[in-house]
Structures are given as structure tokens and as C-alpha cells.
Image 1: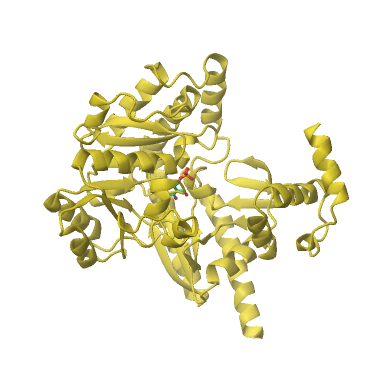
Image 2: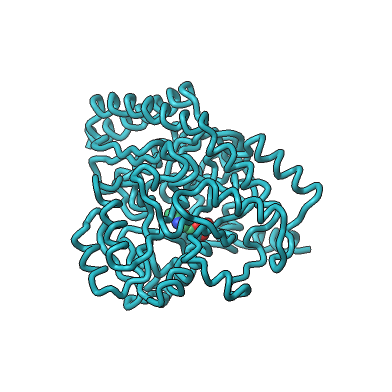
Length: 439
Ligand SMILES: Cc1ncc(COP(=O)(O)O)c(C=O)c1O
């Protein structure tokens, strides 16, 4: 019945003008775009269509996706690393199917075998003394738990975060990120969330000096800002300032963890042992939502006092735990990590070559497979997203810096795949440069 009603609405509605420019669009895709526009997020649908990115993802396999109308795209977006292992990775899919045979979400009040085993694995695989895990259904929720845990552990309220950080869209995680969005929803807490610029140790020191900061919440390589790497000594400096002022260090590894930098966790590249580590996205294999907050015994002391201090029906769903456990095995294997490192080098060389031939490509940010490309135009990232889409590659511009393209190859890609990526990138660069030359 619900379907019939939607169809009636659509038949009655005049086609919205935003689809007028789309040529040769199937009825199925047109209907999906119109339904999404009518019943979901009109502004987002209009924006993507307006940019020439009318993507409606249909088939997906490995590191490729196909638009509903068949347009094939190499996936260099991976939804922020959700598809780090590729879409529908066979082992993760097998873990999911096996799980479905015997398990369900479970009852979050009680001890559970898949949840307990995954928590033990996370304690083993995370750096330093990280010990307790609280599971969540997504990264935003996990960051909220991290902030609350830090507040209770220190008895302090304030959190320092980066002006260019993104930690999710919920209450606390939303307030910790970009100010515009939180303010828009009257959900900012300027007195509680102190924002400092990235790579500025003096600003960090000034913020921490009063001694009233519970935690620094920081993405190891800020994703939405376009993966600008930390300068030498920055993260180590932040950590030692934290120790000096009794402030906890929360590493948001939602995008940078799970092998993407060539180490299982990006913080390991700088020898940082955080007090709290947050992971999500790729932990799910893109198959079953799950995120996790891993904290030291000291930070997680509340777990010994207040068993119901945090409960989440879907956090740590047993099916998700079984998938995540397989994901961790794959991501932590030496062969996956070695692949990340060698592919990073391979792409790094080719990108440097491209940069020599194409002045529009002005900079390459690269930490393992965590990459951002800089262009000679304030809107260069958007221009390249659109042009690459035409050439069969989906990579998304950085949300806080439209001059940059997030460039995210998967953990298990091989050299022939990278050659295709580079060929498409070169074609898109030539197109943009020719258009600019033609004025
Ligand atoms: C670094 C980082 N942290 C947290 C989140 C929030 O994760 P989720 O969308 O699962 O709530 C994101 C999402 O993009 C992210 O990039």
C-alpha cells in the first residue's frame, strides 16, 4: 500500500526542474531521485545533481560501484573508509552470512560471546594500555561516549578540538566539529568546546594551560579538511601537553584507522598512545553497522561503578561484532598492511609524475592510503569530482575545503587498479586544464 501511495504522489507531481538536464535517464533512476528529493533530503539531491553528480549507486563489488543506469566507477571515496576492504568483501560477507545463521543483535544488557571476544581483540590490537570497549552503532555515537567518559574520568567539562575537525552529527560529537553546523541547529556549546587551528601547538598550549580541559578530541589526519598531515612533532606535542595538564587524548580514528596509513592505527605512526581510541566506518565492512570506543582502565573506571551508565540497543550488535572481528583480522594482517604501504609508494610516484605534467595539480597529501589532492582553484576539488565522475571514478571533494579532493584507495587494491585510477585522473586533469585554457 505504501508503495502505491508513493507512486500516485509521483505520478501526480510535475517533474521537478532539477532533473530536466539529465539526459537518457532510466525511469527507475528518475523515480529514485524524485522520491529522495520529495521524501528525504531535497537540498542534498539537488546539490549533487546540480554539480553533475547524479549518482544513484546500484551494483557494487570490490572497489567498483555502478550507477543504477550502469555507469561504472572506481570507488576512491569508500564512504570515508567504510569500504576499506572493498564492497562486499567475500570473507566479511561469509562472516555476515554465518552470523545470520545463528545470531541476531543480541540483548545489550547481558554479556555476549561475540561482543566479549571482539572487546578482547580490540584491547589486544590497540596501542598502549587501551583496555575497555564500549560499542556503538556509529562513529558519532562513539565520539559522544568518548567525550562523556573523558568528562567523568577528569571531573572536567571542556573539550578541545580542531576548527577543521569532524566527529559526527550527534549532540556532543556535533558540537565538537565544525561550528557552522552545530550553530545552525542551536546545538553548539561554545563554552564547553574550545576550537583551535590544526598544526598549531601554541594555540593548543594556550587552550590547555588553564588546566580545565577534560580531553583533546582529534582526528589523527583531519578527513573533512582534506587529509592535511600533521606537521613533524605536532601530535607528539599535543600528547605531551595533554600529559602536562592532566588532559586526556582522544584519537578519532574513524577514517584513519584499520590499516589505512600502513599501520593498524594512524596514531602508531607518531608513537601516540591515546587514552581513548574511537573506530567505526570500516569496522563494519560496510555490511553491518558498528563502532567502538576503546579506553584505558583509568578512563573506563565508570564501567566498574555504573553498569547502566551507557546503554545502546544496537551498539555492539552480535552480528556486527562477528563481522568486525573478521575485519580486524584482515586489516591487522601483515600482508594487508604491507599492501597499504607499497600501494601508497606506487601511487605516490605516479602522482608526482602527474603533478609534473599537470600544473592544475598543485599538491599531494599522502600518509599511506590516506590522501588528499590539492588543486589550483578554490573549487578545484569539486571540479575534479565532477570531471572524474565522467571518466568513471568517484572521489569526493573535502567538505571543509573545496579546493581539495579526498583520494582514498582501498586497503587491498592492486597496481593494475592504480594504473586505471591514474589514467582517469590524468584524463580529468587534462579536461579541466583545457577548459581553463579555453577561458
Ligand atoms: C573522523 C570521523 N569521525 C566520526 C564520524 C561520524 O561517524 P558516523 O557517520 O558513523 O556517525 C565521521 C563520519 O564521517 C568521521 O569522518
